[in-house]
Length: 442
Image 1 (cartoon, rainbow, N blue to C red):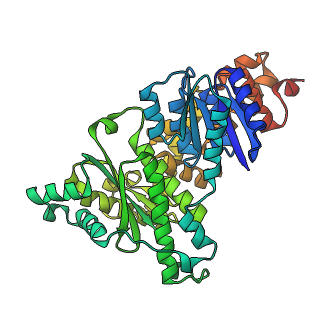
Image 2 (image 1 turned 135 degrees about the vertical axis):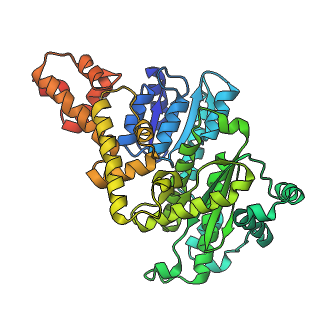
């Protein structure tokens, strides 16, 4: 069953779409509604949302901004965008953020439900070839490898860039590989080998089939919104080259590093979901120029090595680890000290800013010069709280004190602890304490 969140600053639209969904016969568990982007973000952080249906123009936070922040929390969540304006720029940004559909108001009921059905039906369905293998029909599974010369060409580009690319050779390879850039990043996907999982008792052929399936999962995710190339690499890895042209890279609304992190988490999530394999993902920085491809390749490989130190974490961004601060790879003691410092600084920032309207995990991570993914992992590991659970804890404890010890009205208290809407504040308060602000006051 699926959970759907409908977001619109017009209550009648939220109510109407919720009623349509409730009567649709779809396998829906809960339908949630929110009247603003900030309210929706709280819902996404606290509930298991599978599908987000959002308006695009909603005051303080647009639907595009909501999608950006929501993807950091739940990269695998699907989105349908609705808008009163048929604006190409909005539609283009929505598609680049992975929106499954872009519908124009006033909505046609059947068109809306057809869009939702299409998204929901695809959520739990792997590719037909993978389904054949998973149903136990491995003998009927036709393994179509990527062309070896194609993978060989790409791998040589990653390991011998400076040596192999003369002026004429560079032009030829660029034409063959369609790598124009000029901005590039590399992602490595490392799958567990048969010897790493003796309890599974699967063969080398099984591993090759699973590797092929993982490559296809990667390609399906990438084809949605990325200009990319995915292929096999040595050491049984899968490599992805991402590229941007000048215009798409400079778009301020996208946040390319955040998008790479979201992609990394989506790759790990979907490979684990469909193949029951805990893939380790290494993400390079973004550099300009094809001549840096070997550098990016080394960065992605080095990022993967941090799984040796963080065995319970699976997505690593090279830029999180301050390599320049160490003459050699840091010792476990140095790593522990550095991790504690990151969490301490994050807590100090949250303690001083939890009442700020629109506070986001991305903002806290930016202050610490690490990715939201890595900060969330360290914060939970060191404190036992999810980062946003800690924000809510501070807000709720503060509001409880004000309810018990002041004559402030509900809307005033909501305002002081960072909530736009008194109703939204009351909803979270009741979920946290089990009774409403007015019930506590009595």
